[in-house]
Length: 453
Image (cartoon, rainbow, N blue to C red):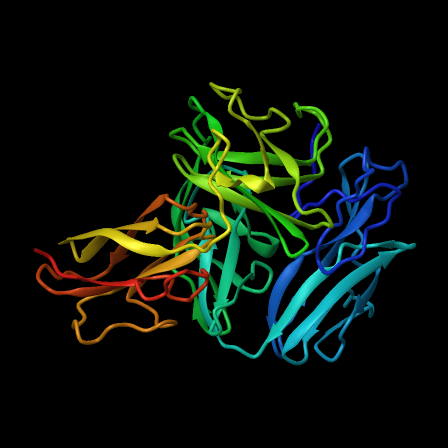
């Protein structure tokens, strides 16, 4: 059975109507199976986005059927903004779903189709400047005539970040090797290697490497859940799962299913409460998925099943299921994780640099010594810089790495940053969480001065 893909795909409650709430799905205690009405619900994508004042972004409304097919209803729905003075959205001919930022603030966008109302989409309009663009994944290998969805994240001067895949301009270094469709959909059209990047409002991303091969090689693959975080806080249940690809080849199209308060242990083919596709996981890499829903309960049991349609041929199928509780906090697939009622705290545990061939490569180990998950953060290197000139928050380094895989409490991230300059006997400043994206118990230990011995 083939599933549809959505950037944020939530299964709606029965009877074909979406529950009310600000950008979250309500968990239906009596939910058993999808309804037999034509549409289970309407999903607006992107579901959360930051739009600069005066800028526009195209939203789409997708009708979700019980056959797991989607129908583009963008031109057929009635669009509505809860605060038109913040962001207006058009119902005009050929402009349906076009949203424009009017003034700084927040609004909720909904789309209605014959009485079926969409999951609310939270929109933030900002007057902050655009500072950074980062493409994910950081490198890609794709087969000839295959497609893969890339994403671009924008970080603004106030520290907030948002998916900007539909707002940026996607650029290929060689159009005879790869070409772009809408919103970062890349297709391999010729054998070879090139780079791709994005631009928006005068800001350009670092390029990522793309290789197109005749056929992506198959190898012994094992997908497993390397960690899970589940919490209930202020009426919202949030579950984050990281999936690891333990192989020498990339894996595409990995389904992740979430079951809230399951009665029986889920198995392949069971209908989940929530599902999402991870488009691409590089060899030896991990990718994380965040699932959130509004809830009246103080805690939930849940189960995670990866590769839920058994599309990937794995050497070990026994490690694709995780069962836990939000009371457990964050843990590994062994279950019974540690309490996670505090804050994260990131420190630089180790750093070393190697200079040569017109570049300097920094190896930086970042450890989370706090009590909670650190979702995503930047690691910046200020190369050949005096000890007296310590960098400040929101200052861009000479090179940086964006870590978005999620770093659980007690774990270490091994980060590599390359600066296109050599310097064998000069000092450099290292700064983690440079855009203050992680709420830490100690914000004073994020810098370190490195000098080669």
